[in-house]
Length: 248
Image 1 (tube, rainbow, N blue to C red):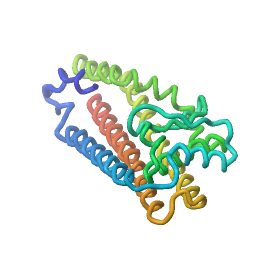
Image 2 (image 1 turned 180 degrees about the vertical axis):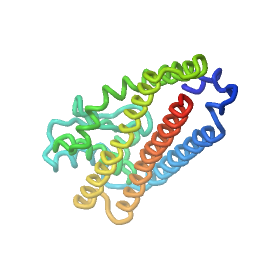
Image 3 (image 1 turned 90 degrees about the horizontal axis):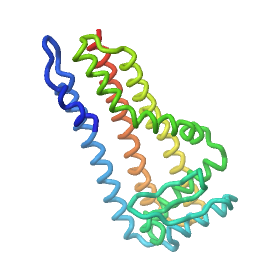
């Protein structure tokens, strides 16, 4: 992690404010707490709504939704783990976790339909999904080099006084890329849930209270992405002010 690598630079420099101020620690622990809270609520909702039976398993819901939307080239497969469900546009597969794939519950139906919502986005060339897919190689690279760029930038600030402006800008550019990816993910996820709920209602795959519970589960799934985006924005703002302010 960044903060383990940079622990040696956390001491207060002469005549200056510590790079890791109380405000930054509050930001880190605050966003961690918010993330854990959203994730905990999501897991609790999933466990609760997993006890609400429906007529079809998650796999059957996914296959029916794809078929009724004219998608015949996407496979529904099982993947290990919990909450590991995702749509892979590279090989056109809806990957459902074991519990979602074989379970007939409101939670499984909601998750399966949501992932099929991404398949519909792919089929219809949904602009935000296309934009996010194009960002993946850049964001992957940015994530890999981000911590090293930050370490070098802070080393320059402490060792040479003014530091390297190029390193600071490159680091901030990688943070902009990962933050933008988190933001772009929001409309993609919300739209997939909207498509899922519309189809669940129209097809009567879930009814009445089951539909409300599926909607609630998808809402809290979306909240985990909202928290991640807000945390990324806050950290980007902090590092931009801290690094550029320290250089000046």
